[in-house]
Image (cartoon, rainbow, N blue to C red; front, side, top):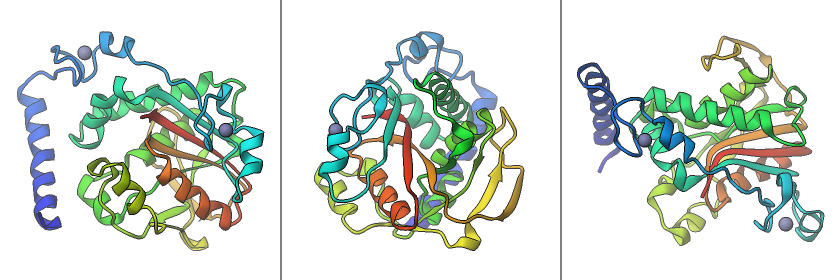
Length: 263
Ligand SMILES: [Zn+2]
Ligand SMILES: [Zn+2]
């Protein structure tokens, strides 16, 4: 299917979602019960993720990368990796957010991530880090109308009085990871599809507390040394690895990875 047809389809889908929400009461994306997009029962059944080491993916209390794992690999690795939920328990909510463009689903996702971030132990001193997010290719973002990871990043920034800075761009419009099997995903990311933004493009996005809209842009920023990188779902880890590699090579010294869910 050509991208133009896909774009037209998405425009109609968004229009239909809007009309549908005006005409019919909403239903829970998971159990189908009439009411909010994710009902209280389904929220209660969300499973919080066990934290793992970014490198070996074995259990790691509080998500710190094992010291031995950091020493064993040649390249720098994030010092900590935190995921809020087990993907299966929240998959339908994320789908409603990303693919059905239901704004309410996005708000619940953002709230879950923000509440998780508040409870992280030991806590993260968010204002000491620059918050950024995994980018989408501009074409894909135009089709969807938003980048879900940026919305999550803005929510975290608002919650902790920090700011968001776009640091990366997606240069290759690779197929969505969700459409590929495990081997195809690895091949898809063999060449880095990400690049760091030029200095002039790194503009701070300030987000007022409890809001996700950007409010103002400041002067462009130098590449920060301490970064929190946010994505919606961690699957194989190849996307986050590719992003971290670019950030480290551009001067980052410490990266914490934070995702809403882990598959
Ligand atoms: Zn439900
Ligand atoms: Zn490890």
